[in-house]
Every structure is written in C-alpha cells, then in structure tokens.
Amino acid sequence: MPVTFIDMSTSAHFSAAPADAIPTSGTVTDRLVEANERYAARFTDPGMDAKPVLNVAVVACMDARLDLHAALGLELGDCHTIRNAGGVVTDDVIRSLTISQRALGTRSVVLIHHTGCGLESLTEEFRHELEMEVGQRPAWAVEAFRDVDQDVRQSMQRVRTSPFLLHTDDIRGFVFDVTTGLLREIDPA
Image (cartoon, rainbow, N blue to C red; front, side, top):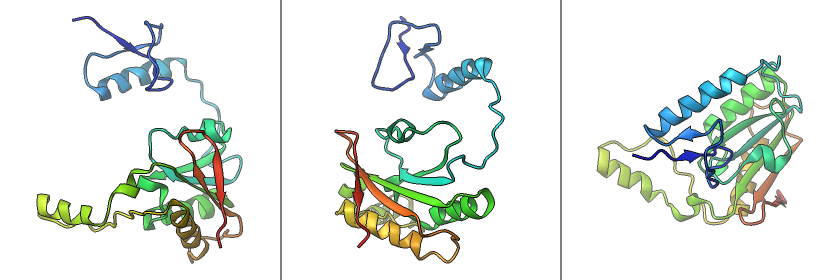
C-alpha cells in the first residue's frame, strides 16, 4: 500500500514528502504521537512558566478553522487559551478564568465567537436526543444560540458578573469571520 504524507502546518495543505512529514498509515492518534516524537527531538525548553506574558486569557470556540495564535499575532507563552464548543462562558470557563486570574496573574479577557458556528444549528433538543440514545440526560447545557452577537454579549455579561473573578474591567468580545479572518468587536450594550 503506498504511503502518503500530510504536512501538519494545516490540515488543508498536503505536500509530497518533507523530512518531517507524517505517514498516513496507522490511526490519527498514532500519527500525532509520531509527530510529537519528531517535535520533541528538536524541542528546546523555552524556560517559561505558566503565567502568560501578556496577562490575557482568550476564550474561543473549538472550531478547527480558528488558528487563534496566528489570527491574534500571539506567540507561545503570551496568553491562556480556553476553548469549548461555541466559545461560550460556562461554569468550567469561569473555573479556568478564575485560576488564570487568581493563580496566574491574568487581568484581561478576550472572548471570540465566529461566523458559521455549529451551535447555531443545534438546539437543547440535542440533550433530549442523547438521553433517548444512551439512557441518561447530560448534566450540561448545549448552549446553542441563533444570534452570535447576542451570545457574545451574554458571555461578556457572565464574565463581568462572576463573583470569582478579580478583574472584570477589561472584558472584550468579538466575532471572527471564518471567510475573511477579521475580528468584529461586539458592543456589550
């Protein structure tokens, strides 16, 4: 069977067979582990700690089209990145932000949703369907939404009103356009 290679710089690009290419035989996880072995062979400890240099936490959707570091001009160590489906502020996001602020010194929070989000096509009915399939209703909410701008506003409000967060004066929300790569800031009002 011929072996093809994937250039891991982005899943949308393929190459002939560079020196650090990943063979596509085996599972995806096998390929990732092999890539990590090559990475580790060239890795040099950057000497950083867990405190982000820019004292900022970014909360964003887990969507594979968002390359947050590239889109925001960030380098390794600049920020804490918290991602989930929709980039919505859930109890677990508040947990992570609280640790980020209280233990690791962040002061600013940037919230990023995006156009064409999968949560715009789901409803809370998804939980009911899961319950029917597996016999147990999920304890978590889907957090589906129809209006991305309003959901960013809701997320900003959840951060601003959390009693656990020390720094709520620099909270800004954006919608990332997946077709242009531009951020559009959302007025919290």
